[in-house]
Image (cartoon, rainbow over all chains, first blue to last red; front, top):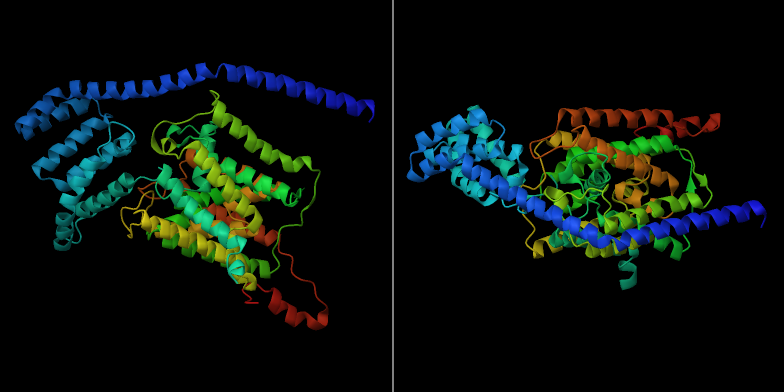
Length: 178
Length: 370
């Protein structure tokens, strides 16, 4: 074993000890990291709570009108809000609900898709925003009617698009890594 | 008789197939209990190689596979450090394999799980993969093979397992520069210890058996050898049985999780995966296992796959439930072009004496059935 070899081994051991001590020191501060992780989970929970509170406040009038069954007025009010907040996914969820109640199945399904593409949390079971069950109910009530309409009007692009939207929504709600 | 029937390849296949479904039951995304391409996309996100937080998680399964393979190779004295066979070509073919997987939305193992769960959209993928491997076998017969590897200093073989140990440290210490997404697929995961244990056992069995999805098909087409193929069938069958028993089997074409209806592109994407895997000798899973047992070329392929995983997210190459993307379609065609270029440059027809030339031409010709 010559001096060159000895020197290198010594350096290797020294650096190894330094790295190990750094890791141990970091491990001792682990409680702080765990606390930070808890903070981030809490922050996420708070974010959703804030988002839901904001939705309830922003769309208060629409929700009241919808509850009273004044669907046309609710839709007008909703369009005013959407003109100011065009990238708010919840607005499109409400639009889909109103259209469904008005009997416009294809449009309702299209707006559910739009909302999900804007905010995938609406089909994420782990978030409080999840509306997968509501969409599946709409799909199961609409599917047969849309398939019947496709047979009656085979070339209608709107019905074809609605059926594509149904399949898309089913795939998204089914889960998977997306 | 029983011992002969239950060879290590079958055991590895059963472990792999059942592991896929069990990991899904424990929390991994639906039909994605084990998916090398998805896991590498998650890893790339965790390492901040792309910015899609919903796809950022350090999957313990990758670590388990590498360390299982490493430990088994050391134990069985099969840890042989080799490399130096066209590393840059392997890097880019690894990258394009992930491109193909991402356009289909899944690696060959996920394809098996999707088939076993009744997802009929995966049939196009199976056909594409089989065609790609068949094509690769034709090229092998025509004299196409990457240059021979050679023994390398032992330290080269330790790099990839050390990388896995580093990832394991990151997984438990959770440093701030490693991103763990809290929504979407990133939040869908089995308990860490369960993932590590299951994948470690699969890694051990896969190292011992040489299990490889494309390798099984290649050996079947090339020499009619069925050992690895039996493992692939065992994986499919065991995944099907467990999926059926646990209510995860939903036969159908529509409404399948993380799938799309562009079957032509699915076919081409998996043709790319099959062909590239035959050229570099192994599917993505096999590359991970080989990298753990000291194969430096496979390690380089894995790093190519990791970069590919980052690019497919960052450049919107990956398909979604809405279908393939323009970038994805172009990337698949580019990948096929790269494969064909490699094939052209590496063709090494058998040199034979003049008097037997006619006979040799038949043996060496592209499209020969021999």
